[in-house]
Length: 218
Image 1 (tube, one colour):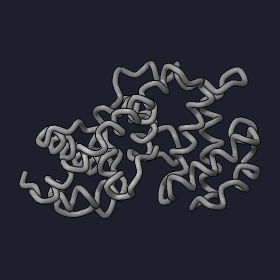
Image 2 (spheres, helix red, strand yellow; image 1 turned 90 degrees about the vertical axis):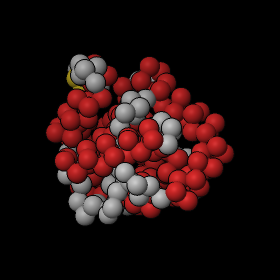
Image 3 (tube, one colour; image 1 turned 180 degrees about the horizontal axis):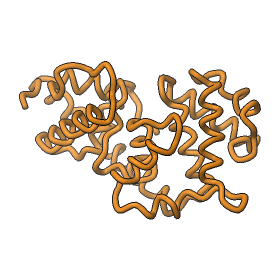
Image 4 (tube, helix red, strand yellow; image 1 turned 180 degrees about the vertical axis):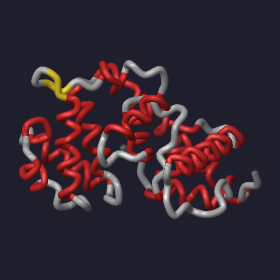
């Protein structure tokens, strides 16, 4: 694999500046699984359902508005939709949130931890999420799992990451579509690149996000 050396050198310099902040953020994610309730984890899942083709901050603002009125756990599709006007495809995504809530509802309460604990590893968890949660592709499922502290060996291949992987020479072209095979192929390439430049994959994901957006967000 031939990388673009000036771009890699620039990336290493940024990493030295932001490593401490990246490590701190990942430690926050790692505490989610043990410290947060099932309801809070469902909030994170709902956020990831909203993110496709929408700005992450707008999605989080919508989630915050829904939480303030307890609509994530109690609201119907219409009430949820009212809070999603800053999110693209808000009609479909409101339905996806309700469908996901129904899937995890047990005895009147949301239950996610027990179910996800049944899987042997993060890859099995991701496959189950993609197959069972409407609106959740590999990118969104990876995002959700990373935010629960399971992001060590997976990548969130959004447009920011893909653009930088092309710039760095990790991939030749940005894929027109990202089905399962292509996602896993690019993820493998990114993992090999991370090993080659001695930056952990989870660190690299946040580092490339920062490089593109200027912030380390969710």
